Image 1 (cartoon, rainbow over the protein chains, first blue to last red):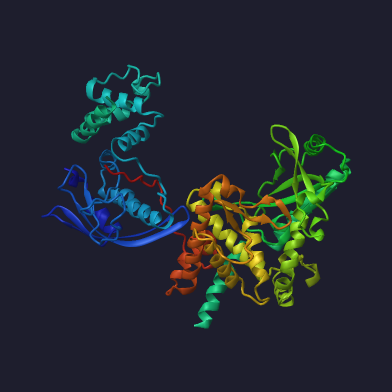
Image 2 (image 1 turned 120 degrees about the vertical axis):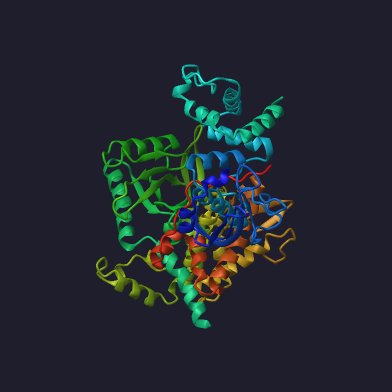
Length: 208
Length: 384
C-alpha cells in the first residue's frame, strides 16, 4: 500500500497545514509554495486533498479550485495530472517518502501551472499525451536516445530471467550488470508490477 | 498618493541604475578598447576605434540570458583608413595582428560581421568587446534618397565573411547623430543636478564634474529605453525564445520617435508607458490610422525603416517568421501589465513584480530581500 510511505514527521515539519486522517487514509489541508523557477518567483497557497485509496499512487485533488477549468493537466473531477503514474510510483518506492513526493511532484505541478498562466509555456516541458508520453518517460528513465531500446528493456523485465553477463537489452553492447542491470533488478523485484504491466501492454499494443 | 507613485517610479529606476555599468567599469572598458587601438596602430594598422551601438548612445543594459545576468558586450567600430583594402585583407590583417599579441591571441572569436574579444572576469569587471572591421562606404546615398545629409556623413561598410568575403553597409554614426538630435533636449534637462550627484557618489574616480563621461548623463529617454530593453530580455528568456527577441534598435528607434512629441520634462516611466501604449496599437489587425505612422503593415508585410538607412527594414525578421510579431506584442502586453502592477499594487506586492519583470537577483540585492530557493528538478506534467 502506498500509504506505508507516509512519513508524518517529515510532512508535519515541512507542511504544517497538512493533516493526515488515518480513518479515511487521506491527507488534507493546504501547502504554501514559494520557489524561484527560471528567475520567476512563484508563490501561493493551495488547498488540496491527497487520497491514498484510489490507486497504487496517491491522487491529489484541487480542493481550493485554484486551477482553471481549461487547464489541460487537470481532470474534470479536479484531480491533478502530476506526471505519469509509473514515474511517481518508482519515485515513491525509491525514496520511501510521501513528503519528498509532495515536494517534487505537487509543488512542481503548481509552479508549472502558475508559470504557464503567465508565459503560456511549461517551464520544465511536458510529456505528450497518452502512450507517447509514457514512451518519452521511459526513454528518460532509462537514459536512452530512442523508444525502441526502452521497449526492449521493458520486454526483458517481463520475459527474461536476469543474467548479469548477458548483453544489455538497451543495445549498448555492454553487459547488463555494467549497464541497466540495477534498474532492471529493481523493476523485477517490485511487488507491485501492475502499473508496469499496464504501461507495457498499452505501449506494446500501440506499436503493433 | 502622489508620494507612493513617485516612490514606485523611483523603485524601477533604482533597479535600472543598479544594473548600469559603473564609472570604474566604464573606465576599465575604455582603457581596454583604447589599448586595442594603440596596439593595432603600433603594429602597422592604420585604424580608428570608436564606440558604436548602445554604448555610443548611452542605452546599454546588462545582458541577460537563460535566467541570469551576463557580461557586458561593447560594440566598437574599427575603421581602416585605407579605403582600397579588400574585405579579405582587412579581416586577415586584423586577426593576424591580434594573434601576434599574447594579450589578445587567447581571447579572439571570429564571426561573420565582427571579432569578439572575451576578457576574463576580474572582480566585478566582466565584458567582451565586439570589434567591427569597417572602411568608409564610398557611396553614402546607398542608405536612401530621403535621408538627411547630416546623417550620411560617415557611412561605413563592414568587411564580412560568410561563405565568402563581402561587404555590409551600416550607418552607426548617422544613427548616433539622429538619436542625439532627439535626445539632446532631454539630456540637457536637469543635467547639472544629475552630474553633481554622480560626482558626489564617485569622487574617488573623478577629479571634477567635467571629468565624468557624458555617457553617465542619462536622460529620461535613455532611461526609458534601458527599462524597455531589460523587460524584453527577461520576458524572452522566460518564454525560452531568446532567439526571437526584438532587436534593440526597434525599441530604441520607436521610443525616440515617441519622445519627439513628448515634453522635455517627461518622466522616464511615463515615457515607458507611452511607448508601450503606442506599440500596443499595432497589435490589432485593424490598420492603425495615424497620418504618419513609422510602423506600416502593407499586404501582410511589416515595415519599420531605419531612419538613417532605408535599405534596413527593422522588422524584416517579422516577415521571415510571423511568430516574431506575435511574441513581440505578447511582450508589450505583459510589460504594460507588469509596470502597471508595480505602480498600483499594495503591501509591497509590487516588489515581487519588480523582481519577476526586471530580475530577482538585482532586486534581492537592492531591496535587501532574502534569496528564494530555486526549484531543482522540475517535473513534466502528463495526462492520458
